[in-house]
Length: 108
Image (cartoon, rainbow, N blue to C red; front, side, top):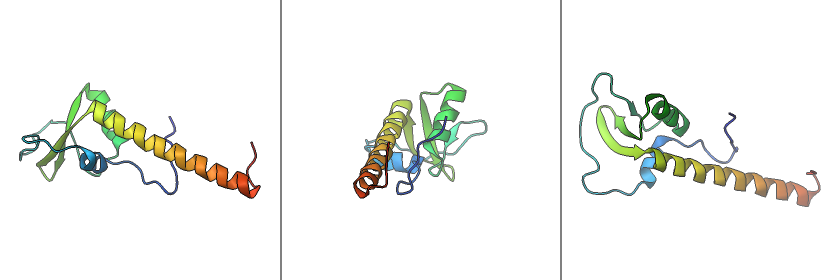
Protein backbone atom coordinates (compact mmCIF):
# COMPACT_ATOMS: atom_id res chain seq x y z
CA UNK A 1 0.00 0.00 0.00
CA UNK A 2 1.32 3.42 -0.94
CA UNK A 3 1.48 5.76 2.03
CA UNK A 4 -0.09 9.20 1.36
CA UNK A 5 2.47 12.00 1.60
CA UNK A 6 2.60 15.75 1.11
CA UNK A 7 5.69 17.96 0.80
CA UNK A 8 4.55 20.34 3.57
CA UNK A 9 3.58 17.63 6.07
CA UNK A 10 6.26 15.58 7.80
CA UNK A 11 5.85 11.80 8.21
CA UNK A 12 4.14 10.73 11.41
CA UNK A 13 6.51 9.30 14.03
CA UNK A 14 5.88 7.70 17.40
CA UNK A 15 7.26 10.74 19.27
CA UNK A 16 4.47 12.92 17.83
CA UNK A 17 1.81 10.48 19.03
CA UNK A 18 3.39 10.36 22.50
CA UNK A 19 3.44 14.15 22.65
CA UNK A 20 -0.28 14.33 21.90
CA UNK A 21 -1.13 11.53 24.32
CA UNK A 22 -2.65 12.72 27.59
CA UNK A 23 -0.34 12.10 30.52
CA UNK A 24 -1.99 10.17 33.34
CA UNK A 25 -0.41 9.46 36.68
CA UNK A 26 1.43 6.17 36.78
CA UNK A 27 1.43 5.65 33.03
CA UNK A 28 5.17 6.16 32.79
CA UNK A 29 7.79 4.32 34.74
CA UNK A 30 11.50 3.89 34.39
CA UNK A 31 12.58 0.46 33.29
CA UNK A 32 15.11 -1.34 31.20
CA UNK A 33 14.53 -3.19 27.96
CA UNK A 34 14.77 -6.93 28.30
CA UNK A 35 16.06 -9.34 25.69
CA UNK A 36 13.35 -10.38 23.26
CA UNK A 37 10.98 -7.61 24.33
CA UNK A 38 9.01 -5.83 21.62
CA UNK A 39 9.10 -2.06 21.86
CA UNK A 40 9.06 1.07 19.72
CA UNK A 41 11.46 3.99 19.67
CA UNK A 42 10.42 7.67 19.57
CA UNK A 43 11.89 8.18 16.09
CA UNK A 44 10.19 5.11 14.59
CA UNK A 45 7.43 5.74 12.06
CA UNK A 46 3.88 4.95 13.11
CA UNK A 47 3.58 2.62 10.08
CA UNK A 48 6.58 0.59 11.25
CA UNK A 49 5.21 0.51 14.79
CA UNK A 50 1.82 -0.74 13.61
CA UNK A 51 3.49 -3.40 11.44
CA UNK A 52 5.52 -4.55 14.45
CA UNK A 53 2.38 -4.74 16.59
CA UNK A 54 0.51 -6.67 13.90
CA UNK A 55 3.36 -9.14 13.42
CA UNK A 56 3.46 -9.92 17.14
CA UNK A 57 -0.29 -9.67 17.76
CA UNK A 58 0.02 -6.81 20.25
CA UNK A 59 -2.67 -4.35 21.36
CA UNK A 60 -0.22 -2.05 23.18
CA UNK A 61 3.45 -1.28 22.76
CA UNK A 62 5.97 0.34 25.07
CA UNK A 63 8.04 3.25 23.76
CA UNK A 64 11.63 3.10 25.00
CA UNK A 65 14.52 5.49 24.54
CA UNK A 66 17.94 4.29 25.74
CA UNK A 67 16.24 1.69 27.95
CA UNK A 68 13.96 4.26 29.63
CA UNK A 69 10.22 3.87 29.16
CA UNK A 70 8.66 7.01 27.70
CA UNK A 71 5.12 5.75 27.47
CA UNK A 72 2.70 3.09 26.35
CA UNK A 73 0.72 3.37 23.12
CA UNK A 74 -2.36 1.38 22.25
CA UNK A 75 -3.37 0.21 18.80
CA UNK A 76 -6.39 2.54 18.91
CA UNK A 77 -4.24 5.59 19.75
CA UNK A 78 -1.87 4.90 16.88
CA UNK A 79 -4.74 4.34 14.45
CA UNK A 80 -6.47 7.58 15.55
CA UNK A 81 -3.22 9.52 15.09
CA UNK A 82 -2.68 7.98 11.66
CA UNK A 83 -6.24 8.83 10.54
CA UNK A 84 -5.81 12.45 11.70
CA UNK A 85 -2.46 12.60 9.88
CA UNK A 86 -4.04 11.31 6.65
CA UNK A 87 -6.89 13.82 6.99
CA UNK A 88 -4.31 16.62 7.19
CA UNK A 89 -2.54 15.31 4.09
CA UNK A 90 -5.78 15.02 2.10
CA UNK A 91 -6.86 18.52 3.18
CA UNK A 92 -3.49 19.93 2.04
CA UNK A 93 -3.80 18.14 -1.31
CA UNK A 94 -7.31 19.53 -1.74
CA UNK A 95 -6.09 23.07 -1.03
CA UNK A 96 -3.28 22.59 -3.56
CA UNK A 97 -5.75 21.38 -6.20
CA UNK A 98 -8.10 24.31 -5.57
CA UNK A 99 -5.21 26.77 -5.88
CA UNK A 100 -4.12 25.19 -9.17
CA UNK A 101 -7.70 25.19 -10.44
CA UNK A 102 -8.09 28.88 -9.59
CA UNK A 103 -4.84 29.60 -11.44
CA UNK A 104 -6.18 27.70 -14.45
CA UNK A 105 -3.44 25.08 -14.27
CA UNK A 106 -5.31 22.09 -12.83
CA UNK A 107 -7.91 20.10 -14.71
CA UNK A 108 -9.82 16.93 -13.85
